[in-house]
Image (cartoon, rainbow, N blue to C red; front, side, top):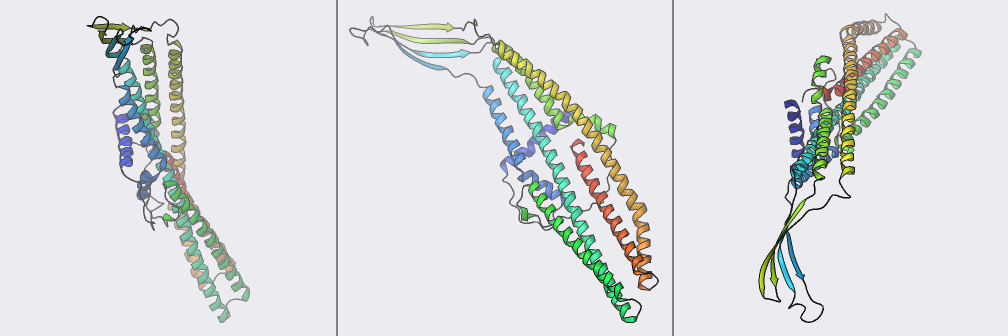
Length: 413
């Protein structure tokens, strides 16, 4: 319960900050970090602004539900004859009337609206976590494309160096023109791959800017590391904290609000009492008097049974939604935890076992080719294998960040 209150307060405070702080009109960012991207998203994304407005609207409903009924001003002319001195022989009444709700209807209505406000606050926290997940996923994609573009640039530089070495060897008689043609073709292919990678990088930056809520050209580049060291929390620990997830907290608040709605519907079946106190002026006899009266509707036709049935059905529906949300969250948690575990294992295998050995093979092959001990076909094959492994490693790091983004909503706030 304390964790749920902290989560609600955190989400609400962030929304209130967004309510009083205008959206950032940030200048174009050349090297956007993940932390900066998350901060920009929280202040610019329309979904969080909308969520904050809905919470404030709910606060207004809470305030209105607790308001007492306004008194009524009453002024009447009675017993006015059709003939003769109509106004002189009439009776005049002036006073006030007030509606008195029987039972604790006002308290029950306030409780219903306050629970609904809590539900919206928890949902706002859930939207914030979902936005963080989306931003982190888009950032991981953009960072991967940035790293892949850099790797493609290294391959272009290596191909250019190979063309230079081959030309030197051709002039020295150690190579044939076909060797140079193959190297130049390799350079052209590497340049084409770099161009394609550059286009995908720019597309990823546009997608990231859109997710944050910024114009497409405001994100010029990203900065960070795909190889961040992560410690996977135990699945059992995360399952224990599942009850504090915003979706579960929102479903619980919705169920409590529907249960309070049932109580309110029962109270609303009790009619309101109306009391009147009037000053009475009897013009015909020039006398002053007063009237006191009460009225109470008789529940003969409308007994509020339909409203009570509706409230009970809505309570049952909210209870079913809560059970469904719990099952869905457990399934998402298991899937996200499994994906992160597999992605981390793949990345660590490539980093600790494959990449070091591939570097030894590549460096030795390049040295032997420069010395003329290996053929062109052998060095090209090793280069392709090395590039494939390095790209595979980048993909594994990207997959790790994506999996971590999926697991992030289940972590403690």
